[in-house]
Image (cartoon, rainbow, N blue to C red; front, top):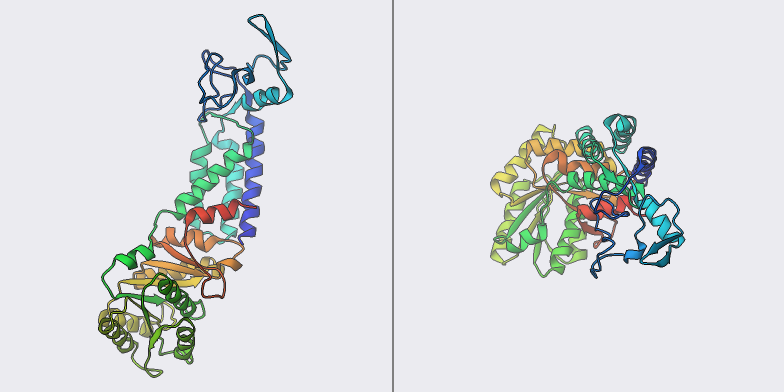
Length: 375
C-alpha cells in the first residue's frame, strides 16, 4: 500500500539529508551550555547538574573543543572517555541553516513526485510550502540522524493537510436524533453498495439497528445486489420495483424506521455523474422528500485525481458531508486520500480495505501518515 509514494518520499528525504550534512558545521558551546545538547531537545545537563532528570551522567558530557578526548583531569582524578561518548559529542555538536536556494531543486522534485502520486496541485503546493517553512532559515542542531529532521517535516506537512477536517461518524450517529438518515452517492462501480453493507454491520456490532433503502432503481440488478448484502449482514431492506421512484423508496424506509424504532437508515442511490442533469435532479428530489442527515460520497482510492475531481464536482452539485474511499488496500499512490478532504473541505470518514464486511477502517490521519513512512 502506497509503495510508489513511499519511494518518492524516501528519495526526497535522502536528498535533503545530504544537503543538511553538507551545510552542517561544528559548533562551540556557549558559556553555561553543555556540549551535546541539541536545540529543541531535552537538555543533557550541565557539568555541575546532579539532577536525576538529566538524561546522561555528567561524565558523558564532552566539550566540543576536545576533538578526540581520551582522558581528562578533574579534581586530580583522570576520567576516561570511551568511543561511545566521543561519538556522541561529535554527532550532536553540529548545526545547520538551510537557505531557500539550498532546497529549490529538491522541493521542485518533491512537488513533481507528489503530482505523479495523484496528489492534486493545490495540495502538493501546500505540502511543499509547509516543508519549506519548516526547513528554511532556522538554525537547527543535528541529532543522530539528519533524515529524521526531513521526515518529521514531511510528516507534519502531510498530517496537517489530511487532518484539516475531522468528523467522527460513530459519535455523531450515537448522539443524533433517531432515525439517522444517511444517503450514499457517487458514480457506478465504486463500491457504494458494498460500503452500505459494511457500515450496516459496523453499526449493528455497536448495538444499533439498521434498515437499508434500495434507492438505486435505475441500474439493472442494483436492488438484488443490495438485497443479497442485506441478507448476509442481517438487516431489513425496503425496496420497490426497478425504474420506480427512488424518493418514494427512501421515504418508505424512513417511515418504517420511525414505526419500528430503527436507529439508522442507509439509502443507496443510482450511480451518476454530476453532469447527468436528470439523475442529479432525481437526487435533489430524494433530498427534498426524505431529507438526509448526512450525504456521503463514495469513490475508489485507486482512481486518484479522478476521484478528487469527482468529489469536488459532487460537492458543488449536492453538498456532501464526507467521503468513503474504497480499495485503499490496492492503492500504490495515496493521492486521493491525501487530497479529497483538503479539496472538498469535508472529511474522509472511512477507508475500504478489502472485500469482507469487516474490511472498513475509520479514517485516522496519523495512521495514514505512519503507513507512508513505515517499513
